[in-house]
Length: 488
Length: 149
Image (cartoon, rainbow over all chains, first blue to last red):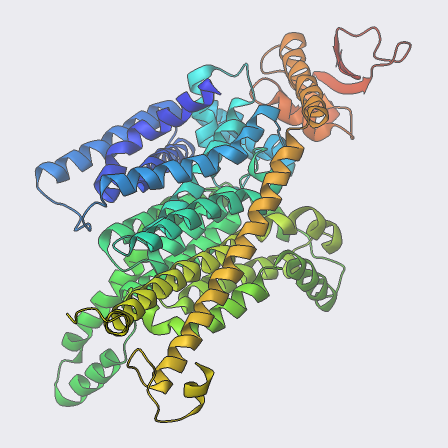
């Protein structure tokens, strides 16, 4: 366990300054720093594959460049316009609750479980990544290793490779153990995000939000089951993607929330292929929330083109808006997209679509719907709470400047549709494929729906306490007068 | 309370109109329902998670995972002890092909065809008089068989 904590500290140290610059002295800093470190390790693995050299050399280089850039920006007095740091006692309480909520399921690390995929995919890739450019390229291209899905993104193997660099390759547990702690960090970002929903509100609402933040961490491990603690990476991409939704699509708009959402989305895109597609969809939604589509540019373009001789002058602001939106998507997803490009250039393809299936699309679709529905038992409850919340608390949600719930549901649908399409158009025998994977591929949707419940819980608590205050304020004079007391 | 709520135009004791009092009551009931539903759903999931953790930490479960784990480590070290680094190996074991390929990573180079390999490896049952009984690396029920081609 001490070794694992050293690895997480080793990942967190290079990410600390970046996390501090982004998140300030808020509780999310503790969980964000190791995720940023893992992201830097993934970038190092991309460079190892694309350019050459070893993981450790690239990791040091990337970490130094990133930290020097942060210090340079700091010296140049470029600051993120972050909201004021929360009072320290609330920060400590949030941190303590989230940490305790994460430590409870992490006790399972004592069992030292290593799951099938943790061995056959992630440990294999971690060994390849830790062996340098030649070992990585020849390993990924070796047809015997096709079972390990060589096209999978490099974040988890890179983190495992760094663990091997620190402690040697004698103890194989260190790589899956690192994945489990990264799962916990991603859930910590989600928990801190839910707790942040209560910031600046009444004390009871804050306490409720912090409790909900702790609960969502436990729920994350509950939804993942043993796959959260045996070195599988499904919880990592799912929790990172849910973190992107909470910070980018739910919490009030702001530079701090936006950058945290980008980091989470980048982690999701670098963790698994379904994380890449879901992360891209989330980045599009975040871009549209921060740079909304308006019809004014159509009207402006039409007016200019009718009235002036040079319509391209009018097109410039439009092009800039679209360039910004594209930047919002491409920049955070760049490492994941570059990895996918390099893998494509090496001639490695996704095994799921290698051979066509003999089953009909209707049969596959039907089986997939059944399989996914069985995992989404929370969906009707979340939908009912959504309807009640929209009917009764829509104004309260708007007043709190939280994002429209449609964003969250769109994100959920986008992910489910991508996974549905993969099952339907993939080549594996559908029933077996669903049996061993659908409980993992739907973790994102399940966790997101639980997060939606936690969000409405916080809003409802705030409204109820607000109504209590109003009622007490209204009732006090009459109660006092009825008791014969003086009128104020 | 129900009496003045049913009569339009009446004013509740707290000074608000009946319609406002109704709205207020509906909101309070709605908030209570949302809080209750969300709390129960989250609570049930948390309970399920705690049960899973407890099950994973049962001594029997831990024993099972420890055995699987030691077996894995034993095979991993066996491959590194019995094969030269960079050896071209053919995995002559369709049942354990993934496991052996994965544990060979960074030491041996698994080959698709036997013809290009200098060594073959396989896992055989390690029973007292079985084929694995004479092998050097006997790993919790399985033994590592390494041969030159």
